[in-house]
Image (cartoon, rainbow, N blue to C red; front, side, top):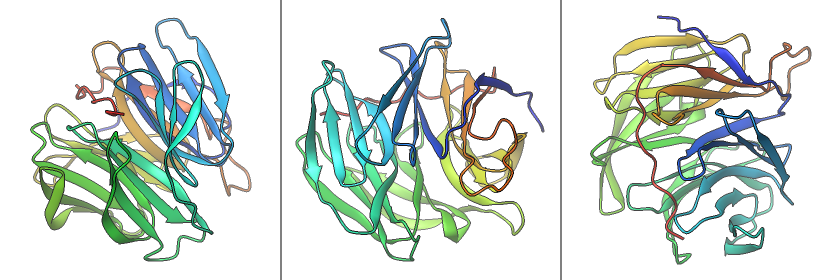
Length: 282
């Protein structure tokens, strides 16, 4: 089923990623990883802001006490409401950068990394607490990408893009177990990238080189497809005051002749019902 999309923000992001609804501020956060930029967009007013970061930024999320948490090339940093920056966890690794991240129901940040050359086993997924304690959850990852939880928090969904799989784990007390496959992306349909989980427990998956977002039911059945006019679809998230609009980020990196809208932020109004996302407890 193809849903009608709109262009929320026409942009030329090199690697647009990580849309996140900031409920307290009534705005959407999203980033350009390789452009080292943090974007905000208020759909009610159309107001936009842009902040440059000192290094490549893999993800940005709201903090419970105000400000933002950033998954950066060299670690996890905190940006206070007054603009002051400080490192929460600083761990530079040559040839490695941050990628997607998500906030768990308990307020911890599950932060992914990858090597610039996407070497197998060069990335990780780590659980970061508000105090800066870091626990490496997965240490044999190529391109750590979409992460999300079921409405009751008992399942965690995860994507390591080159596997072409959406995996699911049992989740309890900040630990995961029982890894298994929810869905596999067939050859020619692209690679799974970012994901979001809706209020029905369905998993929406952005397809890099696939020009689409797919929705899978909790039993792994494909039941919706949103087609986009650009090939590099990177991530998706529900936003708006009632969490019914699906925002989708895209990229243009590596495209010899990128389509006019490549790198823009799209929205599918009334696509479904999202889950309220917790803020980072730090």
